[in-house]
Image 1: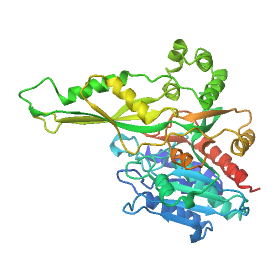
Image 2 (image 1 turned 45 degrees about the vertical axis):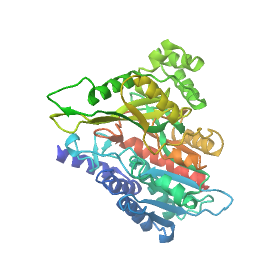
Image 3 (image 1 turned 90 degrees about the vertical axis):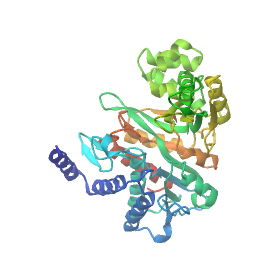
Image 4 (image 1 turned 90 degrees about the horizontal axis):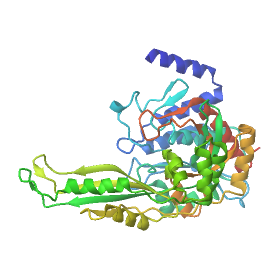
Length: 460
């Protein structure tokens, strides 16, 4: 099997152009640099990408490898390609270097070895978010090598901490410590992309404006404990279990914004019954319970319609022969942008009712932002270029159900958008086992996004 896989990679590499080969090498180096929260090194990845840009002709003065004090593994990179027109603000190319932890024993393949198999790249970060990071770094290198003279300054920001913000989030740190480094008129980010039909052809492109807000809550039960040979009715683990069951059964109400109305209107017109008509009925009347039941059967749409909260970690007890003195769980909420942490926390407290637990927000409490406008230069140029790269494929406005570093940039005055281009068949399994991305659509997305950067920068 290993020989067959190696042979497949060799054949694919032989078929690639020199330009694509250079991208593949950059992508491979980035993916195979472990940047997980537990054992990885974002600073090393930043240095390696800076090395790629220096080899393309960037001066040291245009490559800023920054490392927050006391966190030598949590660095990032800002690369700048200066524009000729100072009246035009910069366009920022944003991607995060860090990835979710991955255990070798859980994966079919080594999560930190890029493997090409059956038309897919497999590895942790192959999709989230090193595909985007590699494309942006590659675009900067190609512009420099071509001697491009952009009218608008182009800034590349490769950050750390998007997946593990409890230790540090580079974007938040930069806003607080070095806001001048990241000044920009707008930023291009993950969160857009597009979807494929079951036959592998494009269904629609996704242009993301706005996202749900991530907020964690700690649900905790405490108890005096005692010897396990003398059980008592008030048990910390049982109390926590009761609270979690009630939270799991709680359904937040449907919310709609201009973006999600546009999303479900567009999807409703192109999706067969019963899903499509149900989407349109929900747009017309969010209180339509029958339509909600149909649409919410799809977990993606269910999440897009409302705030969701789910238990992600649990811990309790201190000994196998002692009554538990403490038990707690982390509840990860993805809040609809019109909901606030205080409102969601109050809803969780109401949901647990008389269960003897406490519910507290886990710092940092994240900003809640209105979505940036889907009109003007950013959207218009992306849509016009999409007609050339993806003829006949509609663009659907979307709200990301995840949360990215856009939440900090938007709050700091930098409108941030998830751009289309990286289409998916829905099997990437980001954050999960055997993460993968389509080789074909990664390369097609790379071509579109390179031309998009040139369009924003004013490069012919």
